[in-house]
Amino acid sequence: MRADRLVSLVLLLRRHGRLTAGALARELEVSTRTVLRDIEALSAAGVPVYAERGRHGGFALLPGFRTELTGLNHDEALALLAAGSARGEQVFGLGPALASALRKVVDALPESHRVTADDAARRFLVDPETDLLSRRTVTEGVPDSTMTVVRRAVLAGHRLRIRYAATDQEPRWRTVDPIGLVTVRDRAYLLATRSGEDRTYRLSRVLTAEELPEAARRPNRVDLDRIWRERSARFLSGGDHVAVSVRMDPARREELLDTVLAVRAEEPDAGGRRRLEVTFQDLRHAEWALWRLGTDAEALTPRSLRTSLHDRAVALAARYGPSS
Picture 1: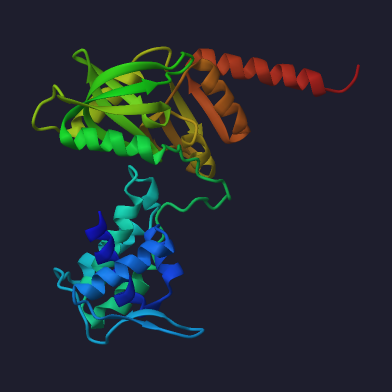
Picture 2 (picture 1 turned 90 degrees about the vertical axis):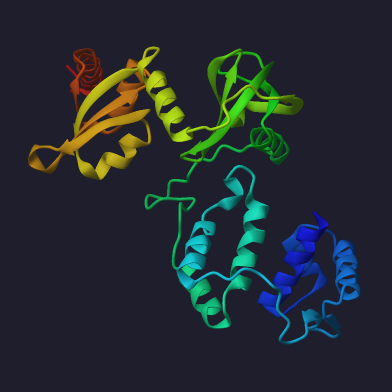
């Protein structure tokens, strides 16, 4: 851990030229005392870092010093920098590692590419916190301590003991065999088996996690994309889920997609409208979602949904109709 921090410290100085102990401490998420100890360690190892006194002072490297890192071409570095411009801290708790990796990417570039790549990456914004309608993206938080334990068990192939709060149930402990991690629309899931049966756990509902020493019972090779598709299909075909055919104004499409479980099909329809085949949690969920869209959306099937929307509209019209 300290070796990684020392490398990051050198890269920060390479990139910024001069930084105070306080600024380095904030970047590395350690105390200023730790930074000062690290500076002493680097000096003892022969890294030419020196202190500049005064109002605009700080720590810097002697001009011309360069770490030995594998070089990348401009497009490769740009791709990584653009990926890092998203909210990396939400990706399975790997935010600090991502920040450290990006510092290494920038430092690995030739001097002639460093400024242009950094400037180009600033012109990409991936998944901002709000959309054009100023609606904030709701992200489910997972404590770093929990995420670290789960991630470590998945990668090491060890069993996990988790305290899980399922919907409408009291939290209880489960011992599972982890297969992999999936993130979808800012929600993270643990794919696992329990007593040989497939299980999918939303990580925001994992209250506590413990890595067990015994090996997980799982295949050596895994196709997470296939497993996720299969589990998604089973989830959508079970319970009280209802399939709905909708004709709607394309301008309200995103509002509809914010409420559905899945989109099964989509195609143009008459009059510049769109026709979508979507899945809702149940009939009540579908009625609520389509009522919000007013006359900009029309439920074509099932008949029961059309009837419930009609009855609601009649009741509302009667409530606000002219007084007799």
